[in-house]
Every structure is written in C-alpha cells, then in structure tokens.
Image 1 (tube, protein in one colour):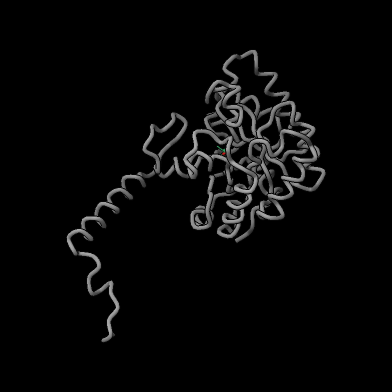
Image 2 (cartoon, protein in one colour; image 1 turned 30 degrees about the vertical axis):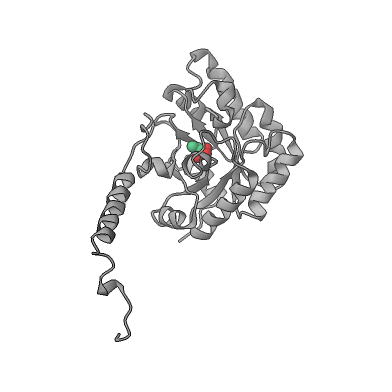
Length: 269
Ligand code: KIV
C-alpha cells in the first residue's frame, strides 16, 4: 500500500492515467473510500450542504474544516488528503490565507489544500505554495460565489471566454498549483483547459476530457431526497436502503420482535 503523494498525482497526467477523487467528511467513510482505492480524498466545503444541511457552503468555518479534515485523516491511509479552504478563510489577505492553509495542515493533517480560484487569488496561491503547502486550484463554477453568480450556474458557456479560462489555468499552474478542479463548465472548454496545462485537471460537471473526476460521496451513493443534478451518476440508493432498515427496526420494536433473547445478555450465559 503506497501512500499517494503530490508528485504521484502530477505524474498520472504524464502517464495518461485518470485520477479518481471523492469527497469524505468522516473517518469511517474515508476508510471505505480509501480501501476502495481512490487517489485523492477531498474534504470539501460541500459538507455545508451534505452534512450540515445548509443551503450554501458559505457558513462553513475554518474550525469545522479542520475538524472534518482530522476525522478523514484518521480514516484514510493511502489516499492523498486535500482540504478545502472555506469562505472567508483566504479572501481577505495572503497572510491570513497562508495561516489558515497552515492550520489545515498542522491541526487537520491535510496534505494539500484547495481554494476557489479567480485572478484575484493567484498571488495567494503563490504565498501558500511558498510556505511549502501544495495547492489545488478550482476554476469555473465556484460555489462560494453563489450570490455573485446568481445561483449555481454553468460558467464559460460563451465560447469567447475560452482564452480567459486558459490564461487563468496557466496562471494557476505558474503560481505553483499541482492540480486544478474544473467545475460546471462545458466539456469543450474543459478539454481546451486540460490541454493547455501540464498539471492534472479534475472535473465535476466538466465532461470526460479532464485528467480525473471528482464527485460528492453523498451524491454517488444516493443519500439525498432531492433531484440528482445532470453531472452526477448515482451508483447506489442508500437513502432507500436506510429508510427500509429504519422502518423494519421500528416495526420490530413496536411488535416486540426486537430485541430477542439472541440480542440480550443473561445470567445464564
Ligand atoms: O466542496 C466540494 O465538495 C468541492 C467539489 C465539488 C470539487 O469543491
């Protein structure tokens, strides 16, 4: 079992091997995901939506990210551990950003950090990288800009924006990032951006031409009751499974079928 490290991730693009990334937010799920062989576990600030039940990722704090990163680090042994920088943990200054990135490493045991990347944060990436912290960029649909975007909207639909995105990806690479998430952009744009950089791109809602893919684990296993977005492939229906299990348990308790002697302790054995 070889630990996946940043150079292994970068090399995968050169070797034309796809990268597999998935989110996790707790130790037990992280262990399952890790043992199933994914390359990177992302502690996404999507935990605001799928763990905390919030409408956006905006309320997630750096303390909450550190806490969940520590849980995941405890569960995963092989996969690379990347932690999201939450809203307002990197926006106000390079120094604040670098300190918070450091906290995710020191207190959460992250092995790299990710931040939503626009032109404004290229210098921030340089500052974090210069502190010895590997950075994953994130281009396209940036959920922390939910209000500025006017909702979760696919970005880069206008073909004229192609060169702007390519420049941003190249600047992100030049700033020292080791990979870039491409979220919610047309597949043609993702293909062009992927070709333009030598670091891997990891897509979500960005089509098949990225160097890797990422999904939110809750979406993949079907833990939601809401509509599954177009870019998600649901591989299981855990919600249905859990509902059935809970209903069976309730029925058993109400009908005195659980616990039986088998589930009980006795003076005689
Ligand atoms: O927060 C998150 O889970 C993410 C992924 C969707 C890339 O940023």
